[in-house]
Amino acid sequence: MVPRKFIEPKFEIDEKKRVICQNHSNYLEFIDPNKDYFEEQFLELKLTCKTCSHYQNDECYFSKARLDKILSKESKRFKCALCGIRIERMFTIIQKLYFKEKYDVELTLTCCNCQEFLSKGTYLKESKRRMIAYLLIILFLLYSTWLLYFSLILFNLTLYILLLYGIIVFYVDVLLFSRILKLYVGRKNFKKLVKNRQI
Image (cartoon, rainbow, N blue to C red; front, side, top):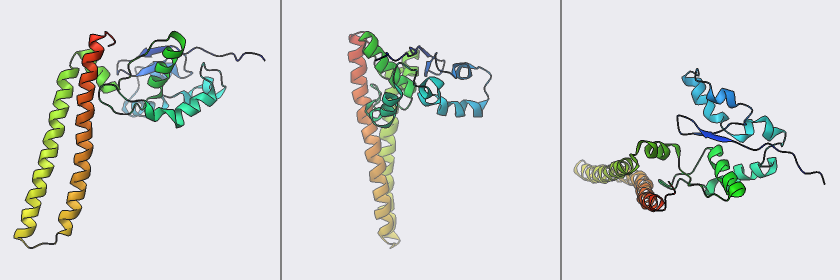
């Protein structure tokens, strides 16, 4: 059986802390500094292996079948180690997998926001600020629920309004509380990664 010929990916991180493949067929478009606002927004959709001719011709280090599998099933398991959100950008995931397979190096996955905070040295400060902001929103929503409850009693209005509002508040509060927990875990991960010199 003839071994499959493939092109090795090469990665760089741009000024927006996005991982970009230097061997992508659209690489020059990715790094073009003269893009307007709308081109920059549209570029986000192109930052994937699926827009590359090497993917379409099955010439990449990762086979087309494997990349499809990563895109469809495996991508959900890749989350930022510092804030817990799902990693959406495919190049970040592919870079991690490539370094693990090729060099047995375990890269720490971080989203673009956390990567930017790390580069500025403000991760702990920003994560604390976000936790406080989420907590204040939770408290405000709970307080507004009580205000609505007393207003309904005072003006003898239907309790269905309170029930609907309460469901919405509960849902939002659970989401925000889960983000606070993820940031708390992320701060612990950060300290451990710094101690082990992995970040």
